[in-house]
Length: 118
View 1: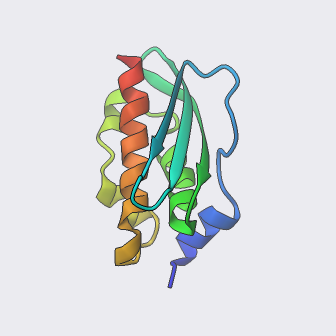
View 2 (view 1 turned 135 degrees about the vertical axis):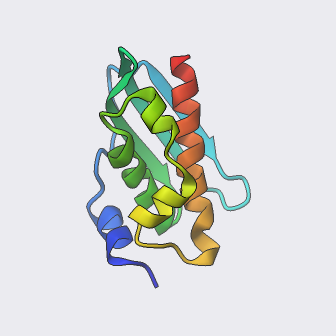
């Protein structure tokens, strides 16, 4: 049902937890399913120096939280803003149709944290 890549991010999440010296924090919720994704980032000189996530929800939501931090960490704000839902789905090795909301939640959280930089 889930790809090996998605399961790997769920079972071995990258960048999970809080980031004490974050200068941008967001919490995004999907009211339809109850998934919650929090991103905390340290943004300096137009770049994401560090990024962490905390998630509550389905397996894909938690895995996409891990994925988005891995994809965006170290990028410039412009490069991170160019990440699309389809990129997250591809990195996840695909998502079941009913789980596409997880990739969108990750993109919504990333967009919100980048807006804090502006």
